[in-house]
Length: 215
Image (cartoon, rainbow, N blue to C red; front, side, top):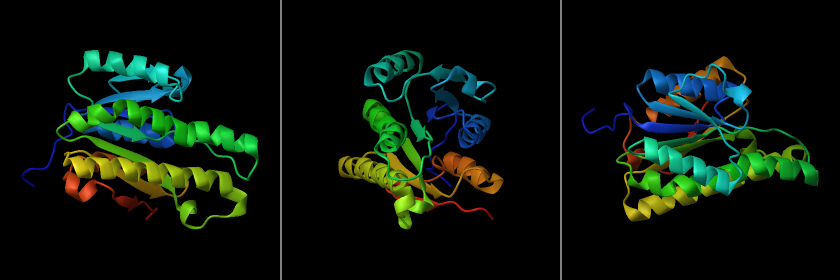
């Protein structure tokens, strides 16, 4: 369709690239022609990930993220995408488990999106997306820590979307909702949907909540 943005040669950061979903997303984005930057917290998790470059960064540390982002800006003409796929799972309501999850589910998203927000705004087709959980719609006490933080992450994305909408920016923020990413169909859908972020205009995408389900 005429006027659709192209993903080719765009710089797309995939955070949490070493997981099952992250690997599939990196492969799909790379195959579509993107310059994929695969980021994780451990070098061994990034082995054999299909990406133009990899980086080991503490994504919950603002100073570490700022230093890494400055280097990326020096190497690339723009930063056009952020796929936040940082995972983590602990059930229950324990305070220590909440802190463990908060660092992974929410803090990494906050730190990364704040650091890259202006870059995405400046792109001609900036895109940001996270993966949330179907459990948010049916919260249980046994998963209260997890669903609370996933809900907070969804709210953060909606706030980003509202800001870009107000500015009239061609940038879009979206949320993918899925069950466990250990099912082949769901992972494949996530990979295809990630590429699809650059196949639709920002008006359609900004603030969208897209449900993924195994076929």
